[in-house]
Amino acid sequence: MHDATAPDSVPGRDWVHAAIASLQREARRSADTHLLHVALPAFPGIDFYFKDEASHPSGSLKHRLARSLYLFALCNGRLAEGQAVVDASSGSTAISEAWFARLLGLRFTAVMPASTAPDKIRNVRALGGECELVDDPASVRARAAALARHGACFLDQFGLAEQATDWRGNNNIAESIVAQLGAEAHPQPAWIVCGAGTGGTSATIARYLRYRGLPTRLCVAEPTGGAFAVGWSSRDRSAVATRPSLIEGIARPCVEPGFLFELVEAVIEVDDVESIAAAWLLRDIVGGWYGGSSGTNLVACLQLAEAMRARGERGSIVSLLGDRGERYAQSLFDRAWLAARGLEVDAAVGRLAVRIHGR
Ligand SMILES: *Cc1c(COP(=O)(O)O)cnc(C)c1O
Image (tube, rainbow, N blue to C red; front, top):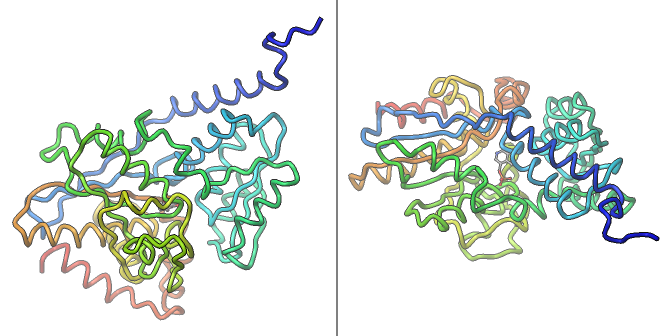
């Protein structure tokens, strides 16, 4: 007689268990990301810290998200052996999801805007992923959902980012930062600054700060006119971006499900040329190449620090380095590419250098 309680009565459960164990082993093999301390000459008494999320094996903070999305799909019974996996992504998430698909032996397709940096597309393909390029960036999610109706597992970064992460702990990005600051001069930062793409990072950090009863405030650094900035002040979920941005990973065209406006205490808008110049300056300040969203964060940090300095406050400000700058060698770090778009990066670098060095 068939025994409905026997472990083998759930088809495919062994594979799911093995896949989850594989993700757990990967997490265990990975070291935590560095929290880099930066002292800027113009800000005595204010410590800056940058969490190096580019140092994950798949090159960006989306490594954390991809791991969480696969675990979420597996634990919710939405992903089984041999099933194809799909998601909509402007690049970084697709690279991380392709990386984990390879780890788990699954076929992965990324639906991405045709305008995505060529290096990122190459990255996904090098990891064995397929890229389906669509002309209208606003249609990527619908296209991925359509593929899922034919049997693929839709990881759905934009729909699920905010739910898939363990916000109370499990070494999420916020718990890691707070632990790493433990012995610093100002272990409870005045501000944490991050961008909003899916909104997952800001939601996780904000929830954790409340959960732990910390006084730290959360600031979203947003390219000027991005949907988070437009919608935040009036809590308008139907807001749309008022201008496009060259900064990948953030600056969404519309309000994403993971944008939790009520958890964010400040939004600072940054023009693209300033973000790009700041990414250039990060090479001198922290000694590595980081992408445009890291530059956006740096500019917002400077603005917050200037306000602290004006009030005579001391303390610390923490931000993130979201991805590797090498991905933008042919775009944000290419003078000809910038000139073709009318971006005068050298002048912007000069302006920021004055704010950083105080002269
Ligand atoms: C996704 C992304 C962000 C924003 O993080 P979310 O958690 O998705 O809001 C910032 N920088 C880069 C490079 C990203 O890829």
